[in-house]
Length: 123
Image (cartoon, rainbow, N blue to C red; front, side, top):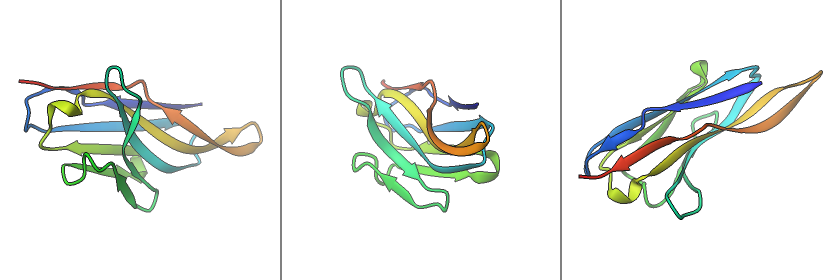
């Protein structure tokens, strides 16, 4: 079993910064890509940023130059540094991990999601 837990959300003023963390734990053989997604009220969940196991990154155009994704493979943790936050960044942020784990006697790849953390940007 694998658990994915986010932390670090909160209320911040426009122009401010927040750092989100996401840790995966459990029976983990390897974590491939990890990423952050967000869902605002009334909208579909959208990709924010992803990072592969070798550090290659991908960002949504709306956050390029403001957000930075990074990971610590030794800690099975991914981070999202969010700077120059805007009201339109308000959403529930979800962590995703593509994990190679045991399924009985075999290794299988599964997609795991965290429970989400609220980020609110408002004055």
